[in-house]
Image (cartoon, rainbow, N blue to C red):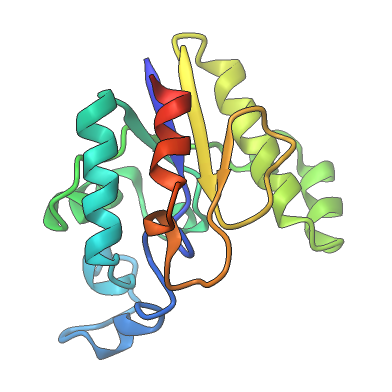
Length: 172
């Protein structure tokens, strides 16, 4: 199985989308409100690139973004469907669920990158069926073997020149 570990902010939800949820009709932060309303929009061109990657590789999406903390997997799937994207199959585990002490220390020191790396590695350890994978993030997860970083400016994300080709290299 091929997996793309996907962050949202800085990858497909770009700086021009941040805060857009507050302008949506019916916005309400209540967890029962659909995530499509509670969360910011994805960049249309970034979604187009993501769809091309999915179509070209047949990869599955596993959400590594902190957005996983704001809704269930079923809610996330529904949000993806309403946005015209193949829904994710899973979330990476939350480090605090399998290493509370390590999570607390890394969180306290501000090492969001290390937490995300642990979560991706834990997912891979528990899913030996994954044969090809890549993590795409704007955080520096360079200690991961298969990593593509979307860097500043934060209005480019997955649309940045060369990013799609780097992702495809890991998934083919």
